[in-house]
Length: 189
Image (cartoon, rainbow, N blue to C red):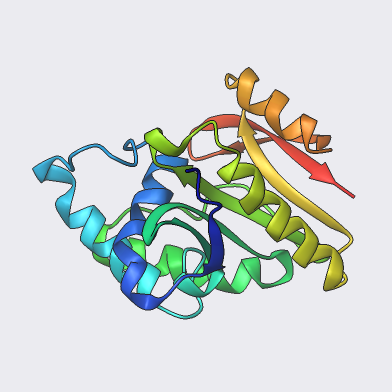
């Protein structure tokens, strides 16, 4: 029997799963792939960032999808008005620990927007509309909390994913160069 997912807030203890969602969202690692040994320090640093309260990838910004007691996916989203402050903290930690300067990236979001940052679903649970349920959960929350729009970035080469977002009512807003690639910023008002 198909079990409907429970959508809930993440806890600090789920930071390792959230870190995998971030890596999957940036195409650095499939959510279920074994972590290469050389990426372990980056992963550990990201887990620490996910455990913090006011970072971009904080557990506090994450909604979890759970089926039968198993975490099967997550979506990170937050108030775009808090983006600059959280970005400075997050990117400052990365730069201090690894020397990597991420501050040259475009500002992905801003005031009045609820920004959907990263989402990933375990492969055996894809196609069951769990991602859609996470998206709807966040879009409804944003609408109920007075946000003018919900925004996200989609890789220009991921046409199928873009079509999926368009089916949820998102439309093109602008092109952005972030993390070394061109993305389309999509918006739902």
